[in-house]
Length: 250
Image (cartoon, rainbow, N blue to C red; front, side, top):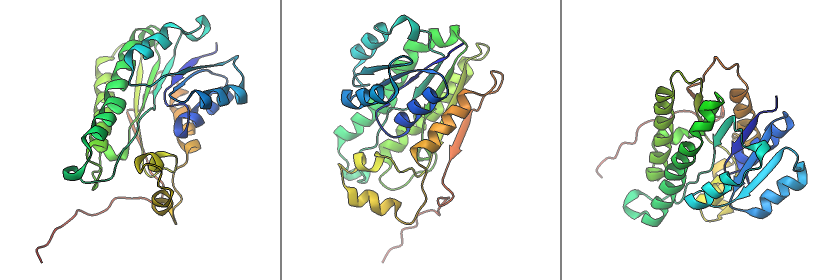
């Protein structure tokens, strides 16, 4: 039986790589994202027999429900949800941060994620499916400038654990996947397109790349149905834990 997975943020980074990985593995894939031209590029690359795309802003609840209502019959039996859409904006400390950016991160990383999850829970329960939430090590390890982004990812991790508890006995599996340093469009988005900042961050490292997380998502989704990975923290070998900050008076 061909299984179906819905992947948000399917137009770049982890999401686009996951779309390709699951299609290559024989799944049907529903890919969502804001950029219709990138979704069309996925269709051009993979065809439309097992790929359905839906272009909308994940923060737009009405558009989200309209896209779900418009799913073709063969894509309605969703067996797995990958809540991947999310972003970080800004690197300033909290006292100098842009409140509009904080709200956009909360609306995208938290509100939209729970809204879509809530909408799909009846189907996922019926099909004893899986929910894979892309969180971040930023939800566990704070760093300067991480403020609201880290807070949203801490929510995703705790929400995943809460879902796991509430869905006890339903057969639905829930996983929080928490990547570390990863080279995608993430830093370009965070810094409003500053390629120099992105190059500096990754210089001399061997960071996680999108295909690494796509392979991780594939592994988790295809585990035997009696196994659940609660949390999976993934870092490149070049990244590890640092010490606490200490401020000293001059």
